[in-house]
Image 1 (cartoon, rainbow, N blue to C red):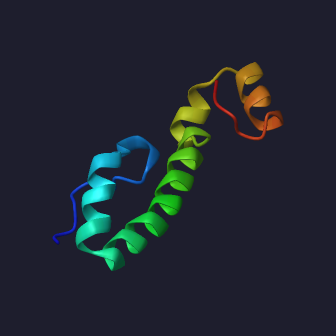
Image 2: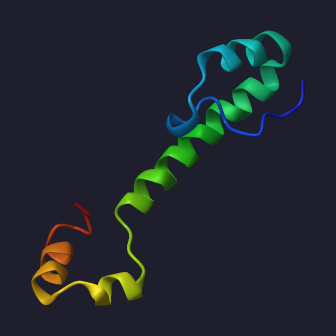
Length: 75
């Protein structure tokens, strides 16, 4: 089976039907995609809490302090 364009195990592109098809046709690909989804989900979560230096500098002083004290959590 060909590798899908989007990972059906990742939270952003979760697709149970596609997972089942892959499981039936290619167990190795199934295991690889499942493991990769953990990394994709962690990266997506990290990006939620990340700002570029430009974005950070655009925040007012109080927002910068709140961002730093909050462990980089973006609201």
